[in-house]
Image 1 (cartoon, rainbow, N blue to C red):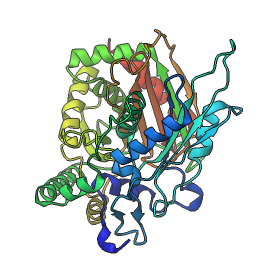
Image 2 (image 1 turned 30 degrees about the vertical axis):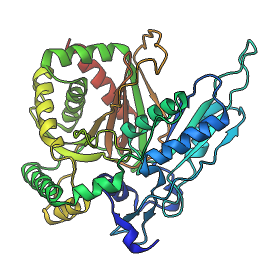
Image 3 (image 1 turned 135 degrees about the vertical axis):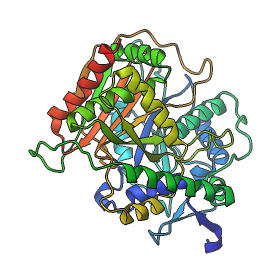
Length: 422
């Protein structure tokens, strides 16, 4: 392709690139995400292949490659023409789709030479009563191709196409279209406003950070809290404070971190989805960016704190689309620019279509904290990612230099604070 066929990355793509550009070869798989999607009973290989091809026609991000030869000025090529998707079936294996997922996700993508996704049709053989088990699609993609919201758009569109071939129609907008808007006059004005917001926040805060236990410097641990009572408590707190469940969980989280930092003011990184415009809401690309929020009065009662983080979060995400390279340059000019004490992301995905999923059986999950080996260590040094499935609150904490004991203690403090608030 000629250079004229390439354009700038969108701000979300650039944010991903900024996080991964210096990864050594041994870690280039870490930006990959994997999903396992249940398929309608009786779905055959050719039907899935045709639906995936239609999906690639619909969403340009699945056909986009990148010119990364100059890491300081990455570009995206115009999307390739859609080609029939190659799809293979993988027979049952020990560990099932979960093991297959890890194996496929561990293979890095060459973003300059290949599309940033791969899929395999996993067959489960027969059930105990001799019936053929439903097949599943294992879908692996690089984070620059799609964030969590966009991944759910892909799943939803795939099922629609399987149910009614030809449903997806003409190509949708792609990341190059978003980049063109972001670097137009209005977009550049919004970028400057976001940069000014960063300046104001950095001028008001001093450095605060969790103390390291010192037993394993640089070690990253990952613990996960799962609890049904915590979800009910978060909902009750959210209703009383007039905020979202995300605001309720964030309040409990910054309370726990603030007390361990011995500080009543925290600089918190929040993940902004940046999908507030109807035109871009269901765009398949990565649009997430970290944005700073200053939380004051961490020791206030949890209802008051939930309201404070709610309004502070709204102010922050208004400036969620920015040039990460410009912010890096700003931080370099600010004497002793502080790092955030912690980071938080409440994951939300598009609502499933009616009838898209079978009704869930009511399950009460007793509070537990478990540990797992993190697939990726990219990201902030103390990062909580919360999500709910309608019955359970899950909070995953990935933390560097904290050790397992402090990681578990933080998660239990979040849990107990929510329950005590109601």
